[in-house]
Length: 237
Image 1: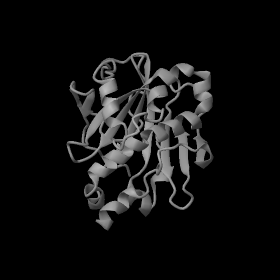
Image 2: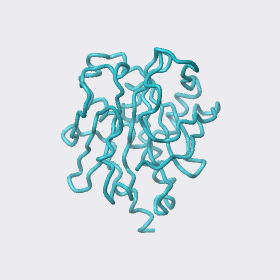
Image 3: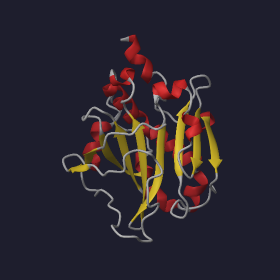
């Protein structure tokens, strides 16, 4: 049991965002430039030593943050990218639940629960860290957030629509121990359609390929709860 708990110990902690604990790095991007004009990705990691979050804002995920034995064991990073599909901006967020590490496999359900509970903190970190961008382009606050949970367990290998960023980044009002997931699914239902890019070359979808090296294959839609079964992940190196 102790071994099963170890891989979740580094996940972000109390679901309260503290700006003083966030370090932001801009790597090759203008903090005021619209992501529809420049590939823009977020890499968020947590330090056990300092209890601080590090957010890199760059044109792709910041692999240097993900090196080292601790990151490879705990896999508590969250990576995200802005994508424009048929002229509309979406924020795609990726979490590694389990796979590639037998310790993570032992606690997939717990990790899914914790990631779901902590995601508003993660999204708030994105909003705060990239605040100048959202100040100059406030319409991005209304962009839909699609969250990919990557797992080799079908139950947790899924995609969920968390609704507009301004709502998804807000703390859960449920006050329960379910991380707000039941309330979220009931609220969002299946009213939002999966963003399908144009089949031919166009100027309304950007970037043309994902900035994040997980399988680009689109999952099959599950109409019941507005969620989708996600493809098996390729481990980020």
